[in-house]
Structures are given as C-alpha cells and as structure tokens.
Image (cartoon, rainbow, N blue to C red; front, side, top):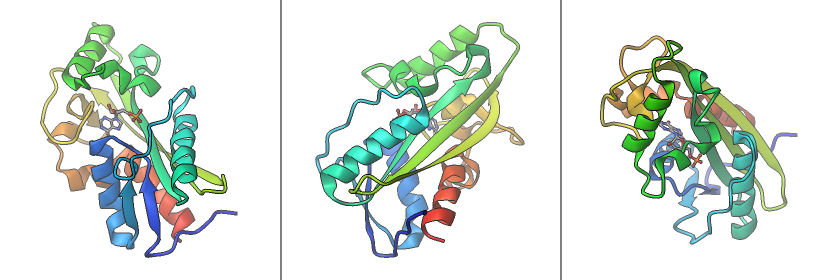
Length: 199
Ligand code: IMP
C-alpha cells in the first residue's frame, strides 16, 4: 500500500548536492511540506555502493530516515551515454573527481565518445521515500536527448551544459530552471511521488 504524506509534514532531503537540493525544494514548496536537509541535521553520507540508481537512492533515504526518525526523500541520478554503454551512469558524480569539477567530467565524456556518431544520452533519476520503520517507495524518471560539444550555458549543474533534451535546441545549461523542472528526469520521477504519496 503506498503511504501518504500530509501537508505540514517534516521531510528530510537525503542529499548533500546543492543543485539537487535546490531543485527538489522548488518541487516540494507548493505542497506545504517542511523540508530539512540531511546536511543541516549533520547526517553522514552513506556509502553508495549499489549497482543501480534505485539501489543507491534506497540506501540514502533509509539511512536518513533511520538516523532522523522522520520520513526522508533521496535522489540518485546520473548521466548516461549510449556510446559509452550507459557510462558515467551511477558513477556520474565520481567522474568529476574529489574537486567536483564537472568541466573535467564533461571533457572526459567527450574524449571517451571520440568520433562515435552515436550521440544519444539520457538522464535518470531515482527518488526514494523512506520511513523510519524501513518502509520504502522508489520512483524512476528519465529524459532522453543528445550530447553536444562544446558545453553551452551556465544554468543548472553537473552535465547540464552538454545535454540537449529531445524536442529542444538548447542545452539544459541554457535552459531556464523553471523550464527544466517541467521536463527533467527528476520532475518525471517527482510526478509519480506526487500521485502516490500526496494524491
Ligand atoms: P549522485 O546521485 O549524488 O550520486 O550524483 C549524481 C550526479 O549526476 C550529479 O553529481 C550530477 O553530476 C549528475 N546529474 C544528476 N542529475 C543531473 C541534472 O539534472 N543535471 C546535470 N547533471 C545531473
């Protein structure tokens, strides 16, 4: 049975990524949910060692819910490139190295693609809601598009400047945040959270 969250409920956002926190807070604001970040509560970041997005999202949400005694929402997401058999995928953050340098990560993606004519790419987001008693619900969203080089635009975060979503001419880096929120992988997963947990 899907569980519901009521307006006024406190929810921990189990992410330490500022770009994701900003986007998820914007999505939750209209619902009257009080959002507290895992960072503000001083919660540690658990090891994300699952082989897929859903598994990692579950690890993060469960760790935050258990430690805080509140329902927790996590996001595990990444950038997948067809010519690289889906890489960087769950390693998207790690390709940027300890300095979180996404110019470097994007250059690495471009170098590895080389002259492969297959430019298909997609973002995936797994959102997991976990409760302190161990109950979890996971939702997946995806947006398809193409890789471009050189990167364009300074909005968004991560690999946004090298991704053009289907039906657009602009990279996510050139896209107004509200416009990105309307179509993104995270928004698509979030739409399912809304139906299931707030419906
Ligand atoms: P993690 O889910 O915290 O392990 O990291 C996911 C990584 O995927 C982020 O650090 C970004 O590099 C990348 N990523 C996820 N969602 C997006 C997005 O909407 N735009 C650009 N990059 C993203």
